[in-house]
Length: 528
Image 1 (tube, rainbow, N blue to C red):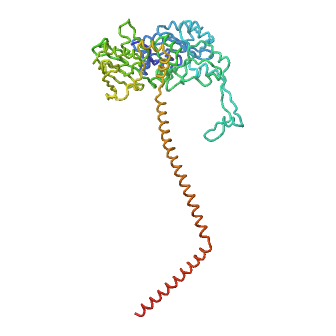
Image 2: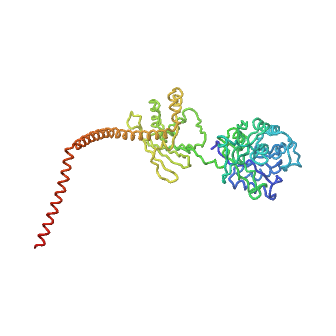
Image 3: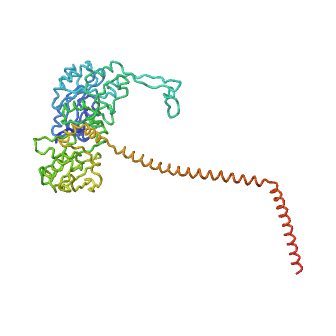
């Protein structure tokens, strides 16, 4: 199955042809195997000002599943630049480039050999010979950006709000009043904006600080990661152990120079850096199989992960395949009466009652599901509503999925006639665009707001009634308070004071009588 696929590539690899290679006894076969062991699909041989090992590397990889891009790493006055050529190119092709750049054979392989031509001239020469020009490891030593920007100390403001915002404090709470800033010379800005290089290599996986519009660099080039295969123990030397330690994924049709060129032209879609590939997946249809009857009986469709085209003459079943696919995935057919009737008729006459359709679908996390749906005809002779039996199985767990198929496998599928009608109807176009918007989060938020409004409404209703009861209680309190005050005023009459005095005398007299009665009782007890 042809089409675009992601390939893991390391486009900056050295061999013993470079003077700074650690182990000169390593063979081309060992280097090839090291690349295969890291899962690489291709490498670029980019020795320092040398092409001596290109042919033997290609020979060692001839029967292996590894593509060799011939190339070279050039040392320029400003820094290093990598040239990459098509896999069909040879050692002589790269040596021809070196000769054209006035690098002599006795200087081959030495990183200290410097090509005196300008970056503009070198890039043009590489392009004239069919290659790609990449500015190597611009964020590291010998990189054209890294080695040519200027750092200077910038004093921070010492007073006012600006100073407060600018202060930086270390772990000991000591205020730092200076910091390092970057100055990009105008000649370097001009080079990065105007030179016709194809891409830049960024070891750290991002354009370096200062490579931005705030420093007047308006061009954002394609960038990728490559290893430069440093030895793990001696990073200043190259070795097979470092191959693939940094790499990138390139989405290509074929592993050739034109494929790379297209990747550099569309990097956001076609280039993924380390850690990006496979991290964010997407749903896709793997394949569809029609049952043993009907117009497309026993037909199997294997889908590519990217663009798929059904090509054929009129009446061979292209639109029918789309209708069967949307039926299998339980997509609601068109609301247009004529289109709906056409959909049902195709299922009746071309799929046929009792004929199963199987679709394998993969969701974003890589889990695959098998959907099997059997058409069972109309619910009544003239009805546009159909019956069917549908099952969906998780192929990882072999458990049946009983949820909403259309939520798990959202697709947009239209017949040719339906596409024409949508193109003619502005309202249909708006409805089509609306289908690309996932309204579920908004609907959930609306549902939550409605629930809270309902709760608030009930609370308000209770509060209104409580306010009425509170008003009645306050009115009753005021009435009782007034009555108590009236009683108190009545009790303030002198007559009531006299009564109170008499009551006190009565209480005292009764107490005395009670005392005398107790004495009499005691005397009687003694007589007995």
